[in-house]
Length: 126
Length: 146
Image 1 (cartoon, one colour):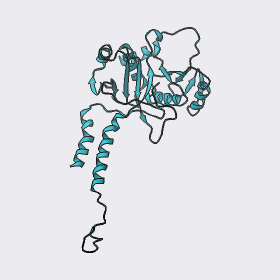
Image 2: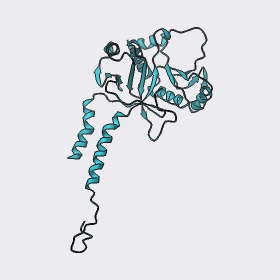
Image 3: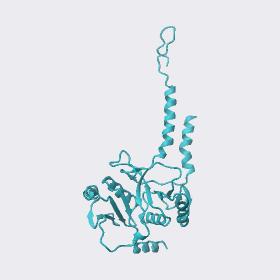
């Protein structure tokens, strides 16, 4: 029974979210615990875009983000960017431009901790 | 399990491990739930519209450039990737403003930029900006797409 429960717990998030990408790795990262109301822009290896794991057409990303940042997140205009590690910078620049057009102030690039490393500097937000 | 049956009382000296397994499984489940909540980020400032216009006055900003072939230079001085950390320490240990601009060729992978930001954060840099592509670069990208 418990084994079944665990198997379902592992597979459920994979089935629920259509978004999958490998994050780049780094050492000196900032801790940013997930909040339910965070806005996450995902870009997978095929250059498809997702907002909070929901697929969205590239042409409507700016409009959707602007809608979000004018109604809900007007104070801390922070966008979490989950982009595939091997993407070319032109795709990222494009995403940054879209974010800027939508009024985003800070982009937080979600990064995985390199295995067996710990940060050499403070991991707190400044 | 059939050992240690001494005397008529049937004393069993085996430790009952079932509750331990129960506790361990509960802990496992708790860690599995909390693990996706832990997230790490690197923050990048988004340039404001009016700032992206080039200023002609010489600036004192530190700009690292990543070229198409992967070579790097800090304020036009070439620097090897292995020497980046020490170079950043040299620069930022004496600078009060912990600010770094990154100018990157459009064909470089995203991981390169993250790596540079990561190294710079290790040297104490606090604020990062990515230079938007110049007008001709943007035009070249647009032409490649059409």
